[in-house]
Image 1 (cartoon, rainbow, N blue to C red):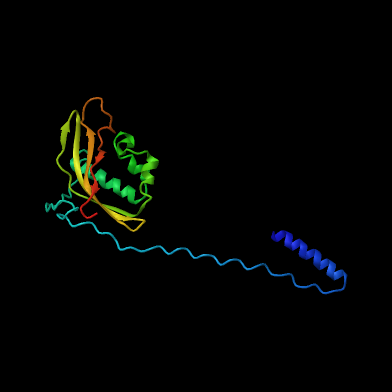
Image 2: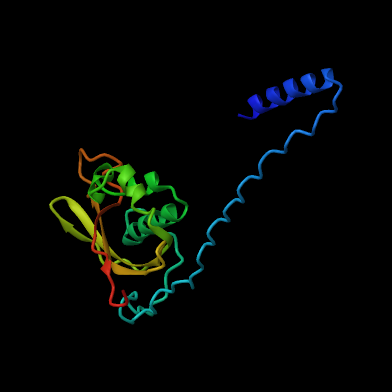
Length: 197
C-alpha cells in the first residue's frame, strides 16, 4: 500500500512539473492508531506458609537438625531428594524435577510435558520441607515419608495452601538391583488442600 502511494505521487510530480505548475505536497501518511498500553500486572501480597504446629503447617518439631554429613540412602537423603525436587521446580527445570519421580517419572501420573504445563497456572510456588520419618521396609523396598507444605498464588490471584507427605521409595541393597533403583525416588504425594485453603 505504501509502495503504490509513493509511485502514484511520483507520477503526479512528473506531470505537474511538465505543465509548469508547482507540485503540491503529497499528503502525509494517515496517523496510526495509538497503541494500547499493556494491562498492568496486578500485584498481590506474598503468601506466607502457616507456622509449624498450626493447621496446614509442618509438625512443630523442636529437635535441632543435624548438620553432620548424611548418606544418600538415609532418611535425610530422602528428604534431600524432596528439597532438590522443589528447588528444580523453582528454577523451572521441570523435566529434571519430573525425573525424580519413580518409574522414570511415571509415578507422577503425568507425562513430562503435562507435568511442566501443570505449573503454568501459578504466579508463585514455594515449599517447606520437614524432617523425614523413619525408614520402613516392605517386599525388598524401603519407604520413608517427608512432610511438605506448599504455598503460593495462582495467576488469578487466589492463594494456594497445600500440605501432606511425600512418600519416597528405593530398592533395598539386594543382588540384581541397579544403582538407580537403590536411589530414593518420589513414589507418591499425599499433598492436599490444607485447612487454610
